[in-house]
Length: 285
Image (cartoon, rainbow, N blue to C red; front, side):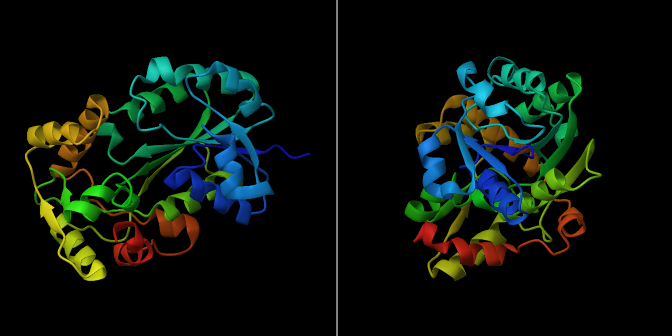
């Protein structure tokens, strides 16, 4: 029997798309997340569903057994990488995992304070073959993390200034991940993944306003006020701090460059922000 491809975080925006593209490619998928029942409810019998928790070593054996390739991401709530992710990476290597496709961040070379950099570094230290998908900001951040402020406040509240962002759709990331996991030649490669356009947040809110048929405003707080207000709205301190750091980097142009990697790897152009907004508009209604 062929070895299953493991997808960590199969219920997330990107993980779910990786599962879908792997299934379309006709490979055996082991889908893992915190709830085995929710995985079964979402994907049915098309995948092997397993419960996995980075902080629970009892879930490691069944998750990694017989796996040679896996898709890995860092859950947003995990900020102590050494304590909460290193043990599972070690367990994966012991179990025979050889190739890891890791969901990382564009510009990581100059953003060594973010947790993703520590994960990249450790995967190399333990001599796993890697493919780093260094992505620009997900369009789906606006339909998840920022959903409530758009839906209820008619605003996007980020400290980015006039900078532009080359947003990428999670569906495109899933397609690239599936290519890296099922085709040869992607070991020890780093791919900077972006959409095909860079937009500032005034352009973003203009598109959303047109699609939703109501005015969505771009609020542009300074980074410290963003941190305080984000925490007051219920975001944990460490998560809010990471968000502030990433948006501050964006403010200085980190997320502006546009690459052609998605088209090269998938054979089609990236999904546009206009298409994303139309497809996800029910999230903000």
